[in-house]
Length: 317
Image (cartoon, rainbow, N blue to C red; front, side, top):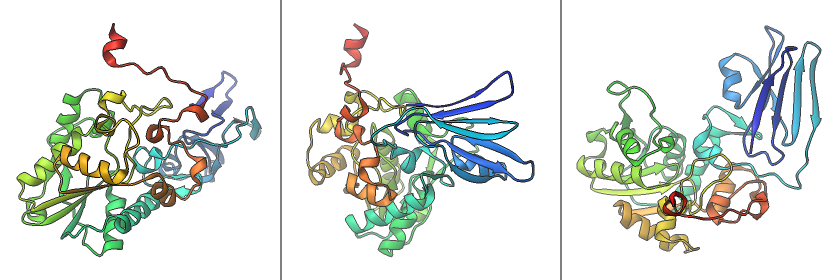
């Protein structure tokens, strides 16, 4: 997968998006400066006070120069493979991708989870920051109030605050330690924690432990992304199969209801609810056959990939 931009010595800008459309790329226009802008996400256009014009289409090459904008198709695909993880975690909440705003998508996913998993609780709290809109949606649909029971300590430590992209368990755990519980919000209460995904399970375990230490009476968790059982070969740093929690517990296609119980026991919650592909598709608003679910299903055939699966130990040998 790729999106790239090239500035030529003649002053032209060339931008292209792969024919499957895994990653976003968009075109904007700054009316004040009469300038076209290319960006990976529309949030960058907002920051520059520019207007969103359109998504660069999969398989399209866009050229910007003094004469304006031209576009050509360099490759065609019988179908697109947009990455749903962009909507649940990776992209900025203010961005719009393929006509769907990321914030509203996450909010809708929370509503989907509230209908699917109506846990009896006193408060809904998000895991900061990407799960906030989903927690709001869960709260709106369920009628259970949402509060901020977990906060990132942005004063004690500077630097990276997104644990998922850290390369080691130790560095991920260090970032999670910077998430502080607000004790009056959770003490003595039944708490529903909303998170965007469970990848390795490292962050989830530490967060649940912190909530227990703060006096939470019960802790439930709902997750906007389905169980991640397989690595991603298209640009998201999902680790080897053995490091993925859902794969360690169940390498095959165990029913989500059974997997929910096993993962709940592993991370220490009283109840867990994963989304499924149908629920995620409904929340995003794209057709299921327009998105890539290889990390969920393990089916890479549509991506024209046939991965050679080896453990870390085998790769080091």
